[in-house]
Structures are given as C-alpha cells and as structure tokens.
Length: 142
Image 1 (tube, rainbow, N blue to C red):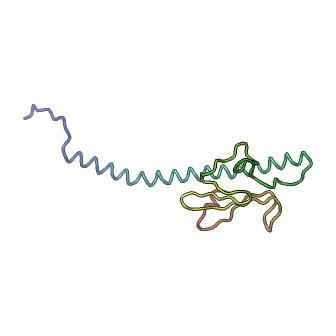
Image 2 (image 1 turned 45 degrees about the vertical axis):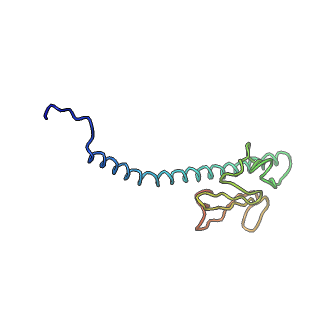
Image 3 (image 1 turned 90 degrees about the horizontal axis):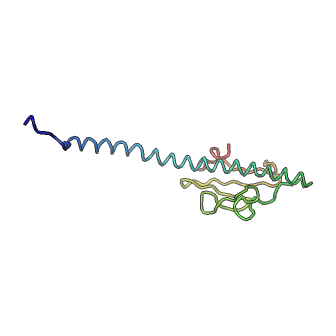
C-alpha cells in the first residue's frame, strides 16, 4: 500500500474546511453590513457638506448682485438643485422638499431643516439637524 498515490481529501479534512468557512462567514457578513451602512453615512455627510457649501456660494453670488438674502429654497429642478450643480436623485436616502429634508439609513431617519432667515436660535442660511438617540445627526452634521 505504500506505493498507492492519494488524490482526494479525507472526510475530516473537508468537514474542517467547511467549519472554518462557516466561522469566517459568521464574522465577515455582519462586518460587511456595517461597512455598507458606514459608506452610506459617509455619502450623506458629504452631501450635507456640499449643501452647506452651496448655500454659502449662492449667498456670495447674491451679495455680488446686491441681494443680502439667502436663497429661500434649496430645490430648483430637483432635490438641492438650487445650491448644487447636480440635484440629488429622489428615491435614495434623501427625501423631502425645502425647508425640511430627511436622510434615512438602516431604518433610522434624521431630519434636516434649512433656515433662510433667523429662526429662534438658528442663524440665517443654516442647514441643521437635531441630535436624538434614534438618528445619525452627530455623524452626518459634525
């Protein structure tokens, strides 16, 4: 029997490999889901920054034209179309219309409000959310 060449795996080797793959899948799949959610939040954070920058750019354009007001509406031909070069497509994480927008990810909604004029403690031209235990305001707006 010492001259016989073995070309197959034993049943124990196959079971061992399946167990290892199962353990790796149990660890990797939840990590992958969290990575996707983190990417969506990062995209939302970039949108918030772009909208805020667009509000300032629009204000500077208005000042050069002699208008001291912030734009009254962030939407023009689409979501945030008045302050962004390309409006955001509907049906994604962002929804709503000026002045209130909602960013939803993982079943959690965060509401942003645009204030074209001074309103309570909010300065004119701000795009803010209110932190709560069930939203991502701190991760999106700071």
